[in-house]
Length: 244
Image (tube, rainbow, N blue to C red; front, side, top):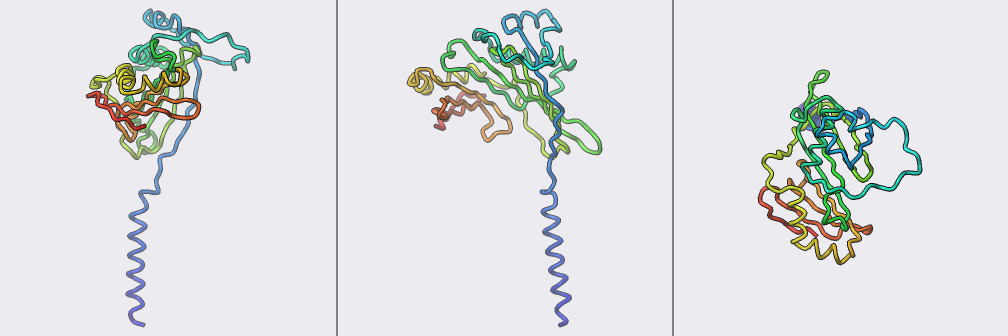
């Protein structure tokens, strides 16, 4: 009977240790949506308008578009720098800020296979920065999607509080392989044959996610039935690995 207090004490210490070890894992970043907006653009003249600094290059959509819409504009011959320039201009003209204060964590591009000789037809960029709010830091995330064939720019903002992880970011100045370069590498590595085998009835998605499993370009050639060709490409050397 005299051993019972010792056993109870040991049991209490073990439980206390388990709780202390597990407690930090119970804390999570809470997502707080700060809203989303859609802006109208004229993709046929947008780059010229931005070069002239016209503030009406982005027009806030305040009403739901009518069900009957005009036909889509023709494909746009924009490249990665053009899309990034549009994102920079959006921050400056609409948000009144500089992108220099934000870090790029993800970018993606899309096009239909039949547009392979024209260029990227859609782009998305995700930026973040750390802000001190309330008692602790939070991570503020902004996403911008540029869809020239829809004549639209989509923007959303989300806060994650408290900031529990330090995110990686993409340094465009250090990258050697652009989205266009990655697409050429993928084509030469087998994507061209697979694409033509479908009669160009497919689409291509390029993703660079600094938080992903592979810190570089990932390209998917896909049909309605799923991906048919997947390749990882190093953004500094151009070396690649065919995943599928």
